[in-house]
Length: 240
Image 1 (cartoon, rainbow, N blue to C red):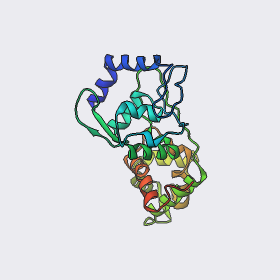
Image 2: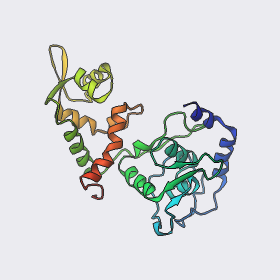
Image 3: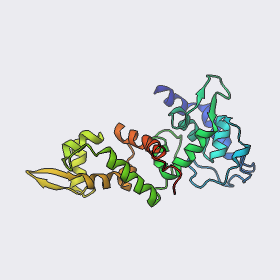
Image 4: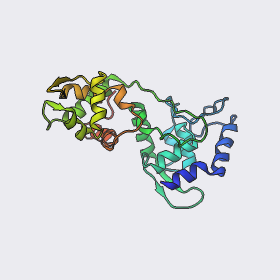
């Protein structure tokens, strides 16, 4: 991951970001809306203006991506390099990313439901920039998420110890016990061991606290990435 650190510290890249902030009088391509008069912070813009998708090519570039999605260049770069928006990289100095329109549409749809899945890690942005995320999601999305985790955990016992839960979700035993002791997970003690009913574990997995953990485990990241796939398979991705 040294390439990420180098790119974040590259002076040319920093100059490009500062140049972007000074472009206040131009219009966003494809939307026809003016850019903000204030400096554009490195954050995910959660309220998209209606996009004229018929005028958007089937294959777009990184520059077109950040204008369409109303995000910064650095955020667009993170989404592409992390694979959160699929793309084809040709290695050229300019116009090196080819992105399918359908993947951009899918990204915008998923971002409305789980914006925390698309936030860049700490240190990605240069300077004192913050990432603003909506932590409240639609009740229908929470209902689907509960069903998703219920099906995923169907093979496990109705009551599990903190150790067993730790092995499943990829967080340390001490961390899980702390969640129990602090009341984040509803549990009960038996023989000085925290026992967690599966129904309360699912409730915790859907909670704002769990969804917004900064350093997520591989299991946590994987389940969030597979959730949109599960919605599509079950015909729930277009339901409000």
